[in-house]
Length: 471
Image (cartoon, rainbow, N blue to C red; front, side):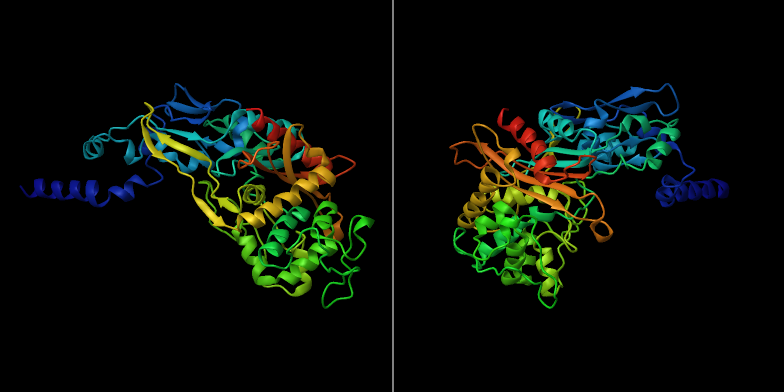
């Protein structure tokens, strides 16, 4: 009887009190074997872009990818050795069938350890728009983020160079992993979400919005009063322009945006003031360390403690100002949607394997950056950039396009290859509806002889926007 009692106590200790510890023990392979005992649920972009294949081994099923490099920045990878990233990681429980929301009889399933079929994640990605973004980037190092302004739905999220997640999905893929890790071009880096770059003159859209919203400028056609030359406050350094047409006093905000005049926009940032500039930047997602779409984006930066000269440089997208392509797409989308900045959304809904809906994601307002009146003026400025200024390469016949170019310097003494940016929105000509697409493009490293936002990034944005308009 004593031995029976001892055995009962020991069995209870192991199965109840030590359950969690033993489940998580690295020597316990039962959980690993179970998670690969059935096909994994799918990630869907119009149609499934993932799948599963029987291995014939101890881990019965392995992840596969359709057009893996095309969607890698969206899906991430699921590896039997290296774990999960991106949507594969965020929704791992749903995809493996362990999410409690999939269970019909949760208590009974827990007792019997019955594994539900993996659920599916339906993304907001439009396959045609995604393909246009990747084809536009080509062999260049860069990224594209395209958003539907009215809802925040992400239509494309592209990063190049890319990689095939299927090449590292199995237990025998160590060589492929090591090759990817050693690649100096970092193909596994998601440049659309996880890398920040100085936005250069594309940030002038934020500066213009702050100046208009706070009354620093009331008429975009009237002279701003910006001096020339403009000497950075507290220094003897002149803020130079890239074109001689900017080297004059009496320029309007419209002139300054169309010709991308650093002196005027830096001066306006200082006149608007640090607190107001910070507030406007935050309206678009800057300084948000928890911007989850649901994959977490890197924190875009606009310093909150600067002197006047640093503020002038920050107001033209230099100094410590840095942004992800996602956040710069939010800037364009906010201007397009009357100052409403919607929370970016990469997932439309979650379903069970049979298609039954588990969760529907609804559009959510991120910030009201400014009112419709200011938005109309900002859109006018952006249209003039495309129609009459540096963004001419983004013009689309039969459409109204607003944009802003940017060529951001970097490297010691600005010796590095400039970052070429373009942000924009587009809608059919004559339409008063909210534009169906806003886009941000950055080329981080190009072998082109003329590295400018208008020359490199604008044509890619045009292709992406044209795809949406032709949908």
